[in-house]
Length: 53
Image (cartoon, rainbow, N blue to C red):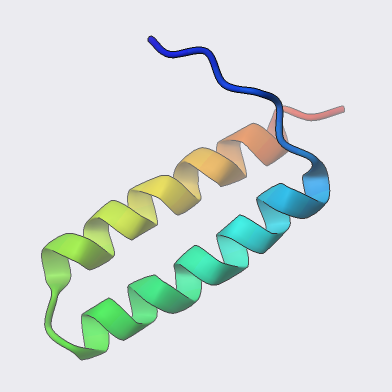
C-alpha cells in the first residue's frame, strides 16, 4: 500500500467533479471500462471526503 499525502477538501471536491465529467464522457463514447475505472476513483474520493471530520 502506497502512502499518499492528505488531500484538501477543495482538492477532493475538484477531483470528484472532474473525474465525474470524464466518466460521463467515457460512457457517451462507449468506453465503459474507462468509465468504470473513473467511477471507482470517484467512490474512493467520496469515501475519503466522508471520513473527514
